[in-house]
Image (cartoon, rainbow, N blue to C red; front, side, top):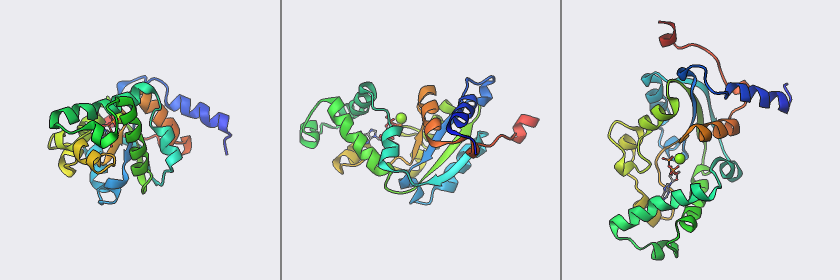
Amino acid sequence: MPNNNEKLNKMKKILADPKHPKEEKTLVLIKPDAVKRGLVGEVIKRFESRGLKIIGLKMVQGTPKDFDKHYPKSKAWITNLGNRTVETYKKYNYSLKKDFGSEDPFKIGKIFRNWLIDLMSSGPVVKILIEGVHAIDNVRKIVGDTQPTFALAGTIRGDFSVDSAGAANKSRRAIHNLIHASGNKEEAKNEIMLWFTPEEISDYKRVEELI
Ligand code: IDP
Ligand code: MG
């Protein structure tokens, strides 16, 4: 068995800046709401049939502590999470004060972060490591908008959910949007480091790479 240092070095090598755009990697978690609806196969199929390569795959039960590490703690990230809802509430004329006791996006974002941790640890998730050309952006496109109400048909969120921030917040829970996908290179690196070990990652060629 490799020791922790060896593992860390191997992961650093796997996550080094890609030599070719097709080596970009991203993390997907099929959320418990999708697992419980039996959508695992459908979701995997969409990434595979688009031409993205699955190089790691496993069902795992995450703890609240795992997800506390997974979601950033920075003020900017939490405020951004809250800000989206401030916008939604304006649009629908809902009262932030009534639902959250505050209009401060940071305070509201902190409440969401806890709902999110509750949702993500409420059942198993399927962790998937995906590699391919612009993997981060292509996966986000296949997944669709954060709010399924606004996600285009043809995306996973747009085809399998109608949930919205308005509906989720009224029920005091995170949006049921089926998938987590890394939002950018930095998130992808941190999240892959958190969820995968070198032994769980496979190296092989898809046929497209051979023709
Ligand atoms: P993303 O999943 O599309 O990257 P983020 O802004 O990173 O969206 O938010 C993380 C998760 O937080 C979302 O997937 C969703 O489950 C939840 N979330 C985002 N905004 C709200 C909200 O207004 N209310 C409840 N949950 C939210
Ligand atoms: Mg995100």
